[in-house]
Image 1 (tube, helix red, strand yellow):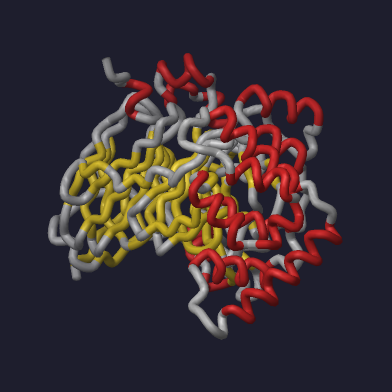
Image 2: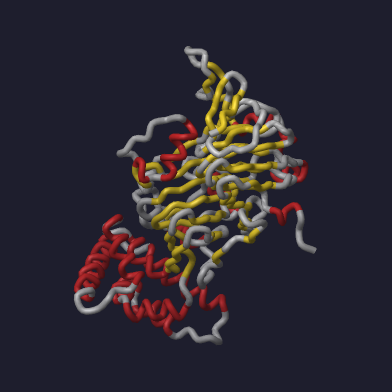
Length: 456
């Protein structure tokens, strides 16, 4: 084990074989900034030490983890509902270096130093980060929801600012850390016909007229006719009375339990049973039949545009999105449900969503490029004693150290120790050279490359 000296403090770094002269970890400099990040303890989060969010938050903030508390989301960015703050160096009462103190918010610092965003980002989005970076630990289903486009977001924010707290759209992408399950987008018309023929409780709620309209759709019918029929039947189901939903859900659950004695239930049927345990008599349980059931393996990603229905179900993921927290909910939730807004805003596109595998940039880094200007994500899995480079880009980045430890060099030969739980703001035009001391897992969120280099 080599002993490395950092100013007045000595740090032991196993397996670092190159002598390095470096400032103290968290050294405050003009370019890279260490961040203290916010946590959201939503009810659906995984509890205590089972939650990767809890572990990362505890390391990032030096805070103890409450074993009985759900830790749902770690927020890295400038959104006012969960701001990140710059870390300030200071000393504790024993004279040792301490990093407990927080400087100003990242949002405030960027507003005073807008050049860190890069010229093109400032021109498009002003003096603020255009993306919000998160880690999610999902213990039970999130609400069936959609995020409004910019026009609707502005209208909702003006009308109900207490519910819709900003006026931005919220396209997003989830990159699986563990196996990750979600409901996403409407199933195909052929699959929907099969559902209506095999789930009599839906027919009981919506009535034969709407069911017949779906069953009579042919391949010759245009998209608008299909979408109109889907909108009608889905809206009727979502608008049904609480008593009706309670009655038919009970019938459906009893039927599935009975049928499970004589046949193997489908994946979707088993999911419906699980959702009913989590949210008894909720309309979201029965509407789950309308959506694609998606299972992502670690390293696979799913992206969602505005006005697309979805519900994350279980697992842990990296998430990136435009800087917004606007959510229109209509099922699987005790929170405010805005059924009319949701049913009217959806695109009613059908078919299985595109799954991104990432584009390999080198043996250790894969890039995930959704079709949105605001963001992209790099995943870096660096084995022990290896190095990689994140080239300078014209926009800002946030870097999360999800596992391991190493040394980072940026714009100078002097390096910084990075360890699990560190979150760093990387200004535009900053190259990062990183060497691992142990296996190192990093995630970088930045502005989409296609924004700077649009294809001709």
